[in-house]
Image (cartoon, rainbow, N blue to C red; front, side):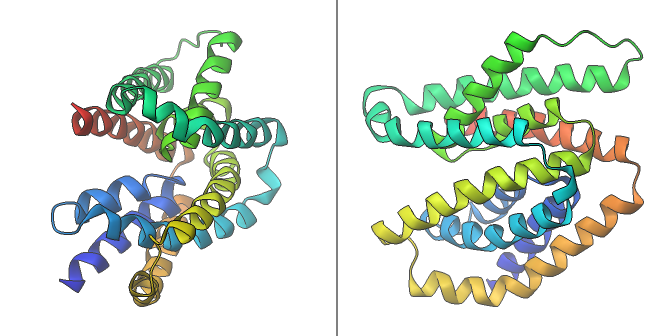
Length: 239
């Protein structure tokens, strides 16, 4: 059984090192059929926290406060009313809506990458997407739309990784505290995390190395395809 955890860790954090995100989707997808989600989330969260610190530090010269500061504020704002809002609305319906938005934004980004014709950015539309991305991450801890937004407003993979990682660091801290308070993080989950830590490092640095030898445009296309797949998965899981 432990080999499934190793496979999930290597795969998830290879993609994390390569693209800067998608580790949660891969980790959950591989383990979801065999392990209860309440046992998956705390382990993935604790494993992912140092990876965000590593990626943020490695790409610190590419940080842009105009990108990550507003998103952090929106995430914190989204976390505050989250509990109250989720009691009054259909959470699955909201996730389906967000998933569709991710797919549409991803398709638009892919068309931009493969087309020589460059359409003019709509700043108002991107502002709305940014607000929804922050709220979605704050409400549900789901960063797919956030990744779509940050990828859309950054030019290179290093810029994307830097700004995404800082945002995820703040979100991770918030969730680690809340998970600890409600007892989701247990001694058993910490033991499993310690066992998987070396495999996380192998996966992460393999992904980082691969991103350096691959063409940046290819890596960005991989990011966009992962966004589209993530959006589709989010919709399917909540139908």
